Length: 577
Image (cartoon, rainbow, N blue to C red; front, side, top):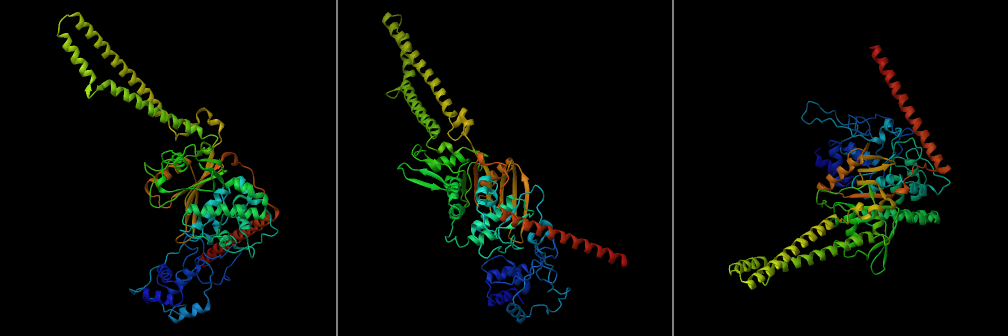
């Protein structure tokens, strides 16, 4: 049948036309393989399927690696997971003439099918299950282009902050349950809470877990009932995450409310004494500037600094999150210049004078320059006549009148006036040079200039995370920076690599100046909170980690044993031949 015929058939079976067409394209117009593609997708909007086909403690034990894991075998059937298509769907497929009884395709015919390249699924690659020594744990988003995907990079970044980690791990549940596929999709308990699933993932990330990666799906499922709003931006979604964490952990343990608020919530005062709280600072395109201080100056004090001294922070949160709202606009002037340290204290009522005094001096200098320029203009001209030219002409005329004593006396007075004017001009030029030099030295966006010799007395907020989107981000773990890249559209995979801050600076500059499509999220953390203390995990949660570690070890050992047996069997066959 033609592609359109099969699309129509799948539509008649209840599938969306765009979903059907995409699946058939991926399956080379094989309708059964297309249905397998649809049912192996994580989308919660698709019809239910049977999950009884999972095999082994760590998932299917079929072919692994980029060529075998999560792909399509030669006859077009799915090899990604052991998903069983429901009988009514099978019968419907059979009625269209597809299934295991298909006639053999003539490979010499023009209608022969091309070989289907299998898609790689890291979930099916047992060789990737064990975390390499020194590598951080990884959370995988479920799908691309979803705001929920920001759960993964955000939670991974926050888990490296001991203050956040310790607050999350403080509550203790009697039973965290266990499922052999918790890291992929299954619930460990029948009705998990957001607090429990956040603890589970944080313990997996920063505890002594052997497992290399896990899906963020458990946390998304647990929080799905809370996501009642239609979030329009990354900033709105992150605001929801922070607010939910504060509220839900406070319900679990009231003593956690204030520490969580201190972690995420800043208080801000307006000129009319109105106060607001902020967990995240969204930056729209009309506030895109080349560095963080120019942006924050404009957000708080206005582009003309007209609100300086009127708007200020009353309380700074320990975690400061800034979100650039990407909509196709880029950062002018060559892109954004990332800074590893940020000093937000200059925006507080206590220290804003350090900027205000310098900005006031700029106004004073402007007035002084204007006054001197006015004086200079008066010295140069009078009633539209150039004074110097008039004096020169008059002196020349007087010198032509001879040696008359009164004429010579007048000439001397005029020469004195001319010299005085010249001296005034010279002094004004010197004053202007000094004033312009002082003005050029005043940089109200340069933190080194603003703080001066007092800089050592201030504690910086240190950059710990840079998120481009749910598929590409960096975070700081102790003194090292790690880069993360996810493949989510076709198959599932991830890459981790160590990088340098200079490399991140370069990529941010290039991205923000050229293609700032999804914007960017910056996470700054108070430096004193970045420690190397080991996490304290309660005994019940540790039991979950220990159980999972044993499952990982058993599954990997079994996989290696099977590989050895297959290799031995292959050697025996070769020797017999």
